[in-house]
Image 1: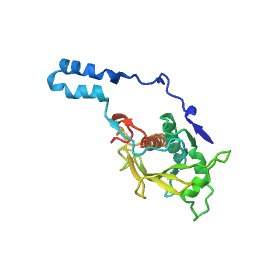
Image 2: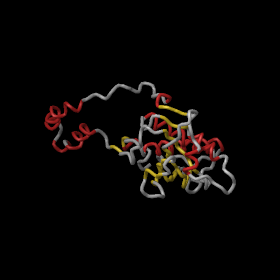
Image 3: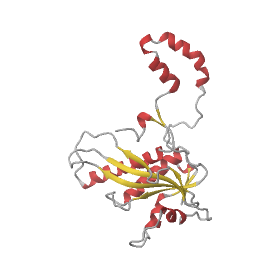
Image 4: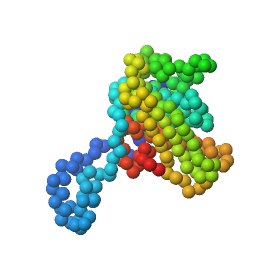
Length: 240
C-alpha cells in the first residue's frame, strides 16, 4: 500500500502558510538591537533573533522523487515484541511525509510481510526485500531506509527508568543494488535516549507495553530526523 504526503494531516492550528520574509528587515533592525540591548547581553539575544534557535542538521538528503520504504530489521530479536518493528516504521513514515522529505512511500508493514515468508535458515538479503516490493501498477521501490536494531531497553538495572535504543541506518537503492549512504558499510550509528523519567521502571504488563511503544515511536521519529533539519532542543537525536 502507498502512502503520500497528502495522507499525513497537520496538527490542529499548525499553519501551512509560507514563512514570513522578515529577514529582509534585518539590516534595519540590527542597529536598533545593538542600541537597546545591554552591552553585556548583545551577542546572545541578537544572534538568536537573527538566526533563530540552534539547528540539528540533516545527516543525508534523500532523493525526494523516489518511491521509498522504511524496513526495520530485527533478526537478532533485540525488540521485546515483534509488533514494535511496525511501530518504529510507522513513526518514521509519518515524520518523513509530514516534513515532505519524500513524496510517496510503501508502508513498512509490506516490507515486514515480505520477510515473514522467509524460510528458516535462509534470510532474505536487504536487496531481495526491496525488490519484492512493488506498487499495484508495477512500480519498484527504489529507495529503502534500512534500520537494524542493535539495542532496545527500558532500564539498565531493573530499577531505574532509563529507556535507550541503538540502531544502524542505511539508505539503499535495491533496484541498482547500491548503498547510497553512508560510506561505512556497517551503517550510520543512531543512539536515542528520551529524557530521563523520575519514576522507577514500569512494573505491570500494561505499563511496560506502553513504555515500549513510546520508545519505539521515539526511535522511528529519530530515524526520520536524520533526513531533515530540526531545532536542536526538540530533536530526538539530542542527548536525553
